[in-house]
Length: 225
Image (cartoon, rainbow, N blue to C red; front, side):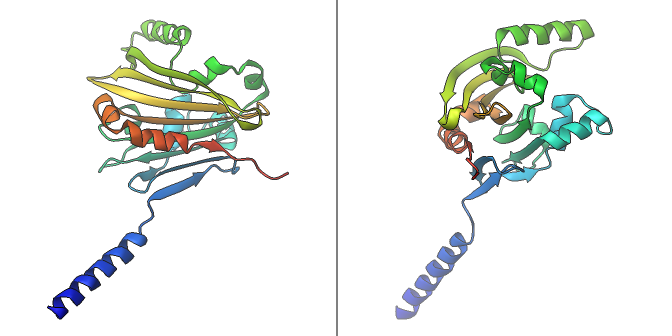
């Protein structure tokens, strides 16, 4: 009996040591150290360059792409058993994309809360209509269809920063995808930090509490000086 108890105690100790060796979260900061967030360690980090090419439409070898790389930082995380950057637009498993943009002078002049809502995908009615018109002009089936707004919150943050958190549905192919989009303009009006969390609507409804924790960790850091 004593040997059995000792064996059980040893197994428990080994399990506890193993558990302690596995961090619960991956902690992330952008290149300049101004934006911070965390994702569960069960997410796999991916190379986000393909996402940048998709969102910008720039050719990888173009000067526009080179300039964008200098002022844009991004990261992507996928919880799928088979991680892929394509899951940004549709997956039964959660996907997290974050990006920080150093704004050009032209962008600083026109930035607004609506621009923050539309920073990645068409969200406001005006931009959605423009997106559909462009799709009709090219004769292509629009990727994003049947928009549904679920929540729209204005964020008033420390040190003059402001932003939005918008949750919405889009039908992409045969599935409805839920996106949770947070965009923050820093107090100087020079940097926009964005986090997008997405998965199929059924997945999102089941795991909304987990996604709230990820989104709430997305913060601007005040650097010394």
